[in-house]
Image 1 (cartoon, helix red, strand yellow):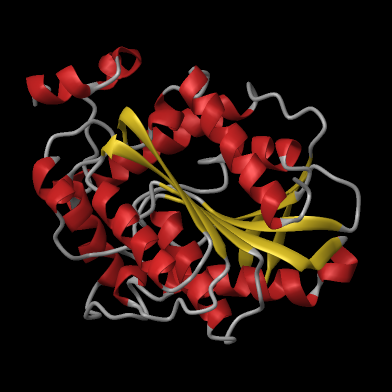
Image 2 (cartoon, one colour; image 1 turned 135 degrees about the vertical axis):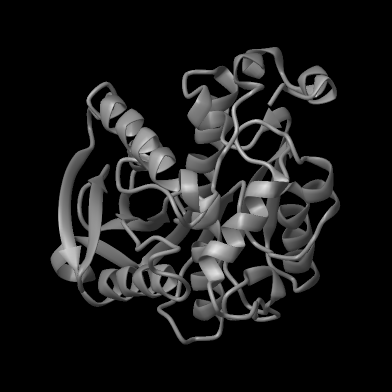
Amino acid sequence: MEPDPEIVRRLDPALHAFAAARSDLSLGGLGAVRDSLNQRRRDAFGQIDAAGVEISDVTADAVPIRIYRGAPSPSPAVIYCHAGAFVLGNLDTDHRQCVELARQAACTVLSVDYRLAPEHPYPAALDDAIAALEWAWAAASELGLDRERLALAGNSAGGALAAGLAQRAAAETAPPVVGLLLHQPVLDDRPTASKAEFVSTPGFDGVAAGLMWRHYLGQTAPSAAAVPGRSLQIIGAASTFITCSELDPLRDEALAYARQLMRAGVRTDVHLFGGTCHGFDSLRPDWDVSQTLLTMQAEALRQFFGQS
């Protein structure tokens, strides 16, 4: 598909090389997309400078978790859910982000390798994320974590899992958390103006958004338990920091969720990156805008932890 000239006009020149990139989430192409993404992230793993961060892989309640230690014990910690439209990704997907957050925010990051749809539809991924949070809370002493300073972070579809955990923490059905960090989050299955407008945007588009939810929900009807944007369980939720992109089908649900939080009296910071598309920080990790994003996220975590 040729890139939309209007999208190209609005896209920052630094991202023009990716203007024709698309996410094929059809069942027929999903295997190839998975293999390609996994290989790219595996190749990039060894090229990422992890100086000052101790990395180890463990399994907690059958859920693989990668631990990034960027501070001495007992340290504040972040339960991190990676990107991938619920159907892609593993512990390598957001490796760079986890390294930088651990280092810049002086904390421990626990990255969750949750099960993927469509083979494992809702609630499998959310159950895995809940298991990781409960494990971190229960085993905090032996893990060298300060369980009074646990936060959540989610990138894209991982944002839906992190937001779901935050809602459960607010309802006191999950361990308490001090903050929620969301980047370009998936939050609502319902139509929005940005989903209708951005049907051919690079990285991710409205068509992919529809397929993503069908894969994730499977035979389950959309509900407040599965879709954070449908839930009213945000009274008393943890402070939230949201970043999103201008040319992203998920833009409007991120902004709507921020408004919902603010109406409920939740401390909420929102930053929209103009001229960017979904996944810009993964497409151009060394771009100054991507570096600015990481700096902002690390500062938000420091504020959650009382370290700012």
